[in-house]
Image (cartoon, rainbow, N blue to C red):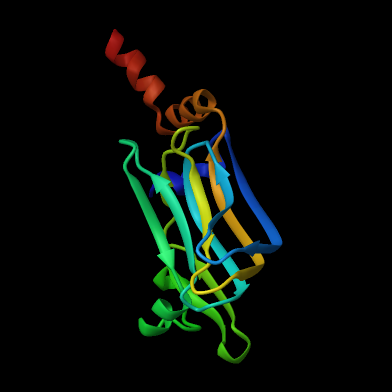
Length: 172
């Protein structure tokens, strides 16, 4: 069992999901679609857009050392990997590919939620980058779990794991 599975038993966290529509991204621009400054877990994100299939959807996140990591996808790459319309067990899939109308959809949903560290200096960010022409983000959505009160979260975790009882016993 991992910490994510214990969340329903813990305090000091919340699920955040948002959807945005009709966002224009100019050629060459990497546009921030969403950000958060609390630590937590990436559950997933998705995008549907009109534009070049080389355009990129990225989730930037940090580990506890501040090192940046990213999950990046574009329709061409997902097609080349054979991840068009396949199960989300792979973590990323191309959900729509209409080359005639330049309309594409992608979802990134890791098999297990990815923990991340975030702060004002190191936010988690969801971005879209237009390549070889403008893009219109018709729909963007994401879901993350945020630790909103670290003290309550840690206190409830210690209680669930029985750590408080163990600490009292050790002090005797």
